[in-house]
Image (cartoon, rainbow, N blue to C red; front, top):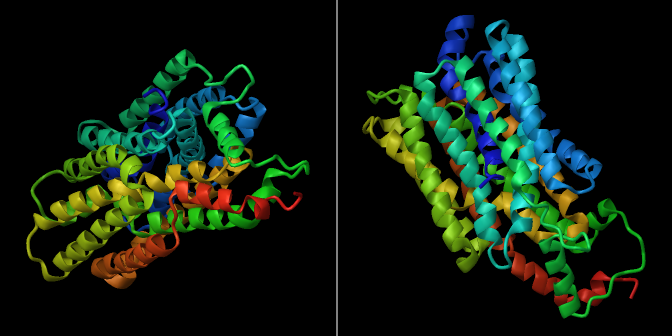
Length: 419
């Protein structure tokens, strides 16, 4: 639950433009589709691409200490949350600082799922990995619900407070290392190799070389694919603009409150997912999740086209986010640390997390242009088409971690050419 504060920072940074838009828009006379606002909204997702490499660098600098790395990230978060108050002085100073906050967000997105999976008891990595998405959603909901009653400046102090709490509590955590300097997941990897009679290759190979070989490269491509579909189902474009989307639906309730209600469904779904994902497997839960996303994207888009009722958008976004939280949200983040052994896990997680932020930046930045070019209905249908392709990808390409381990066991002589 202490590590959980890192994903909360992730969610808070991601959500911040949604409750703060009206005040910043009024101060600088910005339109929703203005280039300046697009930069303010999306810059953190662009710079988040660098974040996983920063966390990987700090992790190596701290000799593998996740605790020290998380403390460093928390301190950085405090500093840049407070500096985000410069938005009131000059919008471009705010954009620059949002860029630094994006680096912090990206660093947490890489470190937290790996940390949670590594401390998980054997057979419970799905449950622990889901805590990452729960933290993200709690951060989003918190900012959605307090946004209408707090200024956009006060929200910066709230974000800094979350990181301050993390920086203090992180020191009560043990390092999760045994006397030989190996964490629990590394010991499990070693045990699995011993069980199937795999001998370590005497050839010294860099993590980068190992990652580009055989099965590892295929698994890396699955990771990239999952992150692409996670973003191009439209989730970040919708979350970062949810208050304005809800306002435009015409329901007589503050858009931030509607956004908070809709996002709370994702919290419910992630909790449900955490309880069933280890039992039913990643792929089944993922496919079920994506089908739900597709159905309610279509209904949401058709309601926009034919104006059935102004209550339906809230219901559709509620169930859309429920579907996302069930599998598409949490699983891509923690399935990558599960796929890879300890020698390449950190690098694989870094690369896949960075790809997520590339896709996130593209979709957030393009959202106003999609709406302007294709209309709201056309933009939603675009997300629905991509989501349909995602279902096919999950059915035919994605594999559960235990299937990967079994395949590696069956082909251990092929995977170790030096033998």
